[in-house]
Length: 235
Image (cartoon, rainbow, N blue to C red; front, side):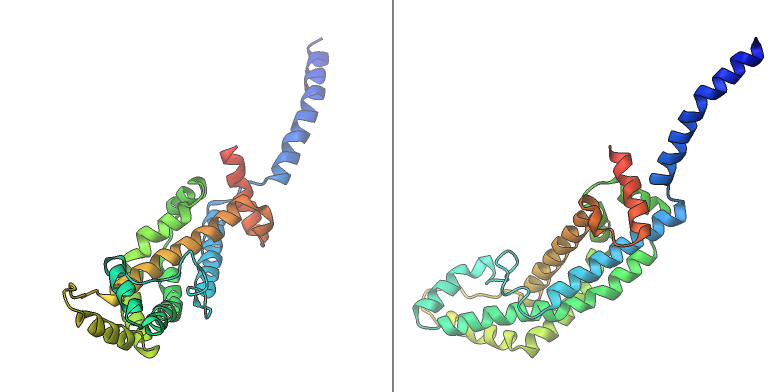
């Protein structure tokens, strides 16, 4: 009797084992090293794509969402300069600001590579389970200061190379000669650096969230394995 009961129990347990085995094959659990490698691959893709996209000519100037305009504190300067016939000069200065940001973008890659290479398993799991924007927030925290430090001299050089500093100086001088206006003393490099940094992280976040939400964006088997696992954890 005991033998018969045991045989029946085994018979009923087999389909369950098959289902579990099939589930494990369809959704294999990544190892610690695979989680870290998968997150590093995703971040390399996201940061590289984001920096390359924003480095293209016109990437800032032709995109109304990130186009760099005159600093808010000197908005009245632009209006007055246009009013006295310097609209073309204002437009040229604005275009140069955006070209300066575009030229500085490639400075970001080595900084991101360093931060990504130092990622720990704990960092990776926090990012993986953190949901949309978690990887971008990790990069903001670990690279934000370094990016600004690297961007500022690069942007200064870029602004000089495209004539933005000269245009800005000429416009500021012209504006400051207008009777009864408050002289402008904006730190142009710091302003463009901040705008460029914010735009870059915004683009990286788009890349990250596309990988999270769209399985078709998970180009390699490793990315599929890691982010499919993350999908199951969040379900």
